[in-house]
Image 1 (cartoon, helix red, strand yellow):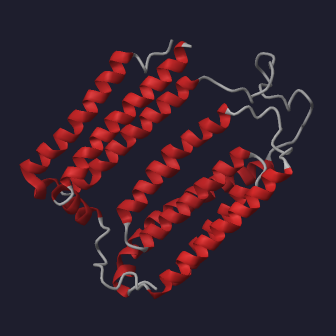
Image 2: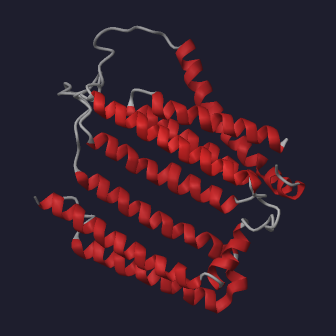
Image 3: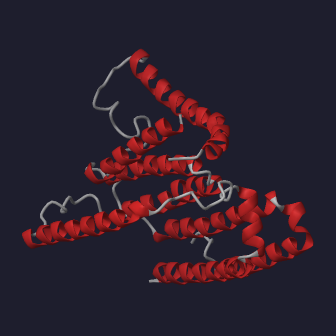
Length: 166
Length: 126
């Protein structure tokens, strides 16, 4: 049952990820990316990381996707000038893509010997366990992260307000 | 690849999966049925974006103000803040007063940021 779910979710994730790359309309790409995120959230549930699944749906599929849509709408899509790419640019893209492929294959070949889930507690990803760890063991990083958020807020307001004034 | 112990708790999520399937299925089914059942009288005026409204000027593909983007970024930050509250709320009794103080410290930094945003007028619509 779990294995079939895994295959189904992987199929959905890979198919929609391919559609992200291949669809011509960038807005369709974003919609397919949402489907990919939901499939990955399903993977998290299968891996017993339910909090991660919920975060993935709320933050990535909910909030980050809104930012993506805004960025796409800020681009000027009236002029379809993306087709006329120089040949050297295409060649560079192919070369860098092949290099990334080599890196991925190389790292995955090394990962074959690893035994995931053998040493870990299966319930480590549940919300209550995560809360226990987060608020006791990793308290300092948790509090420091709020400083990071403060910096992010200030930066966003600084940049956003400056571009409004000009 | 998954142990049997892990499958036991993923099973609990079948109602949520069913809810997603029903939600998507309802939307898709309604759209399909209305396309099948509804009458189709397509004229040039019917195809316009605002059939009964004012005249359309230009198209929808215009770059818009960065103000929306600023609001969205601030929304993401506070969204993440709320997410940190879930593990805290689940363990609220267990963590006790110490956990409460920890969370209030966390929220205090956010309130400083929120005060800055309000003072700077980032949420004001000029």
